[in-house]
Length: 157
Image (cartoon, rainbow, N blue to C red; front, side, top):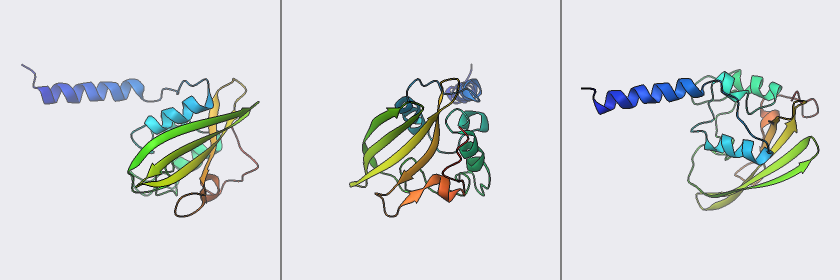
């Protein structure tokens, strides 16, 4: 007889192996950002991260991590612009202009209103990728590309 704990562990390993490296299917920018918010952590496997981010941002996020909870040189959850989270009322607003898009995430963290701006680019094959993430509503302004020393004007989608 198989114990419930062993069965649960086997199921968890199967789910992780079945989803590792799978590209995120999103026909709209808002769907891609929604999928990233649904991830349990900002630390993603290399194959999985490439399904979300522009090529240069993906490479920069994977480089320079000094701990398992850190992504690149970023030591906070850039989805919310904070290290400590008590998020309520997440809403996403989308604007699309040809091959560029912006998704604004609006929410409260510890009761304080915040927003995070997501800039997306569309690849030649029609897939959307996150090119930048920024905020000017939290305790301090930040821009992910700037934190990772990436040029704002040379995005490799």
